[in-house]
Each structure stands twice: as structure tokens, then as C-alpha cells.
Amino acid sequence: MKAIKLIPLALLIFSFSGLKAQHHRGEHHGGKKEKMDAMRVGFITQHLDLTTEEAQKFWPVHNEFRAEMDKIHEERRAMHESIDKAKFDEMSDADIKKMMDKNFELDHKELAIKEKYHKKFLEVLPTKKVAKLYHAEERFKRELLQRMKGREREDGGRRHDGRGR
Image 1 (cartoon, rainbow, N blue to C red):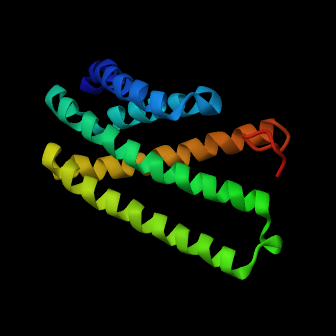
Image 2 (cartoon, rainbow, N blue to C red):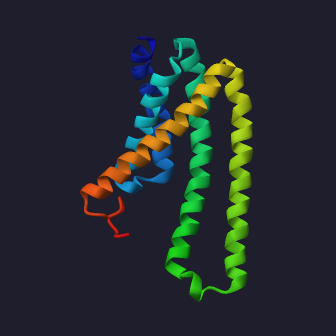
């Protein structure tokens, strides 16, 4: 019941940070990212059963975490997009090695961010709720992928970005 009461609070907190992030990112992806982020907030709120005090401390930290992770994901997405355009067969071994090294660099940055925020989450939430957070994040990803797969089947095998397989 507490989670239902906290959803509006969580969405309010999220919306302010989302507006700032949207300003920096622009409105690419047609609002899909904002919709997905709102779904994530609701999902996490429901699974963590945060008190009002916990929510007030947790969501600003989580929003910072998401913003840092989003930067890494955007960098990785841009790199993969350039690979799609360049085609591996047309690239030199040196260029491919640079891209692989960049991918490992992004993996290291992502891990450093996770370690940094793990400590911060433990400062604002009990250990069990931090563990529930990680579990909820994984479940959210799995459920989102299942939804996307379901849409692909409904769309006759087209991917969510409109391209074929």
C-alpha cells in the first residue's frame, strides 16, 4: 500500500530530473526513453516498498546514477551505430581494435559507476532494499525485452526501430 502512495512522489521527483536530462539530450527517440524511464520508476517503486523518507533520499541518487549510465549507453549506442554504417569487412584491423578497446573502456566506466552508486545506495537504503533494487532492475529489463519481442511478432518480425532483422 505504501508503494501505491509513493508512486506519485516518485514520478514527481523523476519528472524534475527528467526535464533537466531531456533538455540536455533533446527530444530524440520520440519520447520512448521518457516513457521507459517512467515505467522503470513505477516498477522499482512497486518492488522496493520505500517509505516516504527513503524515497526522498533514494530517487535523487538513483536519478544521478541513471544519468551517468545513460551517458555511457549513449556513447556505446553511437559507437555501435557507426559500426553498422562502416561494416566490419570494410574496416581496417586497427580501426576494429580501436572500437573493441573503446568498448572495454566503456565497460570499465560502467562498472566504476555501478561501484560508486552501490556505496551511495547503501547510504540511503537498507542492504535488503539495495539487493531488491538490483533484482527489480533485472526483472524490469527482462520484462521490457519480453514486451519488445512480443511487439516484433505482432509487427511481422520487424524490430522496434522499424528495420527488418
